[in-house]
Image (cartoon, rainbow, N blue to C red; front, side, top):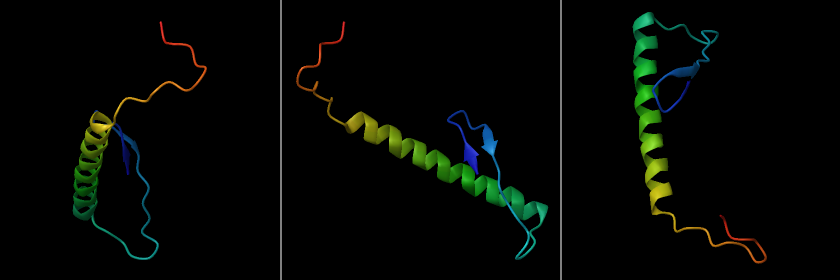
Length: 64
């Protein structure tokens, strides 16, 4: 399951080759996947907020 930050589905991949699943189970899997992705996005955003600013590299010109 791949979703964007807006909660829109980009990709779903599934197979019933080993064992089948019901429509109810599919909805449960989508809900669990969505919750997991939301947690990952929150963790990523928090990590980015906590990162110190990156110092310019030697010889790099300052940003305008």
